[in-house]
View 1: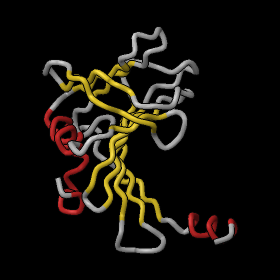
View 2 (view 1 turned 45 degrees about the horizontal axis):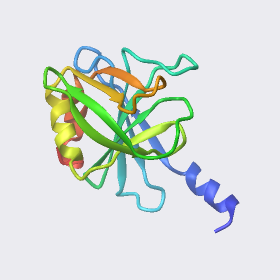
View 3 (view 1 turned 180 degrees about the vertical axis):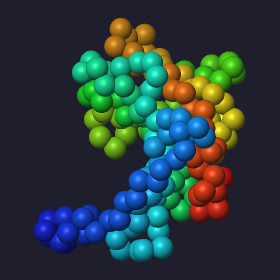
View 4 (view 1 turned 30 degrees about the vertical axis):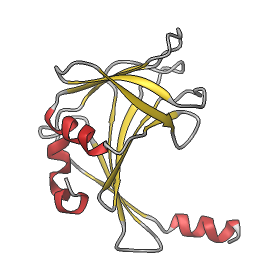
Length: 166
């Protein structure tokens, strides 16, 4: 397929930004995108900016949960070029003890993606926790760290419960 057709197809993707009540989900952004080839396939994206941690450029990291065909993909956009490879990250949900989790290369050179078949365990934890803290675990002075106020994910996702399978 040539580039012109591919660009035209990408432009046909319908994206809706769904307003979420600030009282219910204070910081969550919700987007719904429809696949241009298969109108019945939608991708739901729930994103939230970190309350602590920042890139060298000063931008705050963003936690994103993309759900398509009821399968969540969890990634963090750090906004800085990061070395390629797999990362061990310490993650702490709410008041639980920190646990070592595996993350890999994200969609571009500035993100990491949770690489496990236990994404729903993380999502369930996010639905019932107030915070998520993550930190790369390499011992490098350039370790990445972020704290997210995840309160309100349940309320942000509630209108799409049956579509996303939570």
